Length: 216
Ligand code: URA
Figure 1 (cartoon, protein in one colour):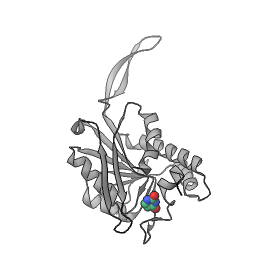
Figure 2 (cartoon, helix red, strand yellow; figure 1 turned 135 degrees about the vertical axis):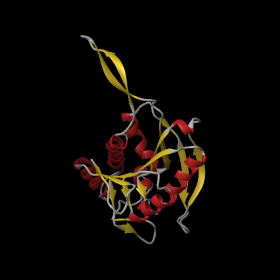
Figure 3 (cartoon, rainbow, N blue to C red; figure 1 turned 180 degrees about the horizontal axis):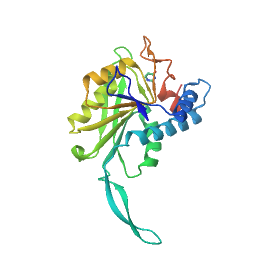
Figure 4 (cartoon, rainbow, N blue to C red; figure 1 turned 180 degrees about the vertical axis):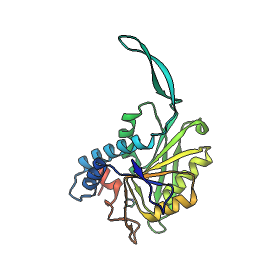
């Protein structure tokens, strides 16, 4: 079950032995790109399981080989995954394995190395935005600048139900995202200590995008 630290009411930490184990492997500088990618994929899938715990269901009839009974179907199936490019891409496949009918939008933001503020260069989501549930994906919640900007872009497009999923969060990022968007629940696998002067999370895992795509 996720836990919510008292200081961050919008934050839930997915605290599960498998998630802790896999996050530790992810942090290890010796973990090669192939394994890093697989771990991000697996952790994202485990987190999506928690993030969708309250999805609405409808009762449906089902014919077993022996008789007709009733079962359950996820109502609406209007889930949309929105990875923040590029590291968020690493979380998509694992979640799609659980929810193959989810749509996938994309938000392109990069962090200006001097100001550390996000610069917007791409935005594409499905058309019926107001009817959809959005899972916004980025493995690292660092300053919170990109996450807050991505949520603002989704809201400008008409989104009202947005959750943010990350693997590692810094308190600074959680605080900023919660301040700018108190209506957006944040799910993380780990809440780390702090940011360094370059905007990296400590102890963190380094640059998630570089480690996912082997561009170190
Ligand atoms: N982005 C990363 O990939 N890593 C960090 O530590 C912070 C932001």
